[in-house]
Structure formats: structure tokens, C-alpha cells
Image (cartoon, rainbow, N blue to C red; front, side):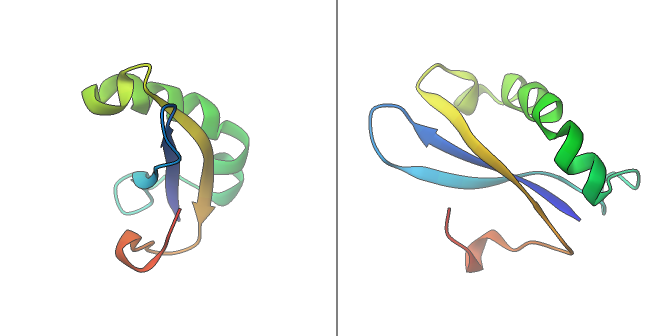
Length: 76
């Protein structure tokens, strides 16, 4: 299970996928937990990352992906 944030810049249509966490790092992460509690974890993650913490970025949505999600092969 991998939790992915889709972050977009307010000034443009540019969006990026960023891995927030995965079950490889957090053995308690489940699909249901990702879906139901994802927004809380995303807010904490965004606050801890200086680039995305600024008001120029917003979280468009989050995705709960089964398995090991590879950003290089997916688009926002």
C-alpha cells in the first residue's frame, strides 16, 4: 500500500505526485486507513516539507495505491 499526494501549484496547472508513505515504511498502513485517515496524514506531511508547505502549493487529492507505487511510470 502506498499513499500518494497529488500537489498542484496555484499559479499554474503544474501538478506532481509525491509518495507520502507506504506499508514498506509504516506496517500499520492499510487501504481503509489510507482512505479514511489520509487527509490528516497529508496535512502533517505537507507541513513537514518546506517546498510544499508554502501557500503556492495545495493538495489536489490523495491516492491510495495497492503495492509499491512507482511515480516514474504514472502521471498526476
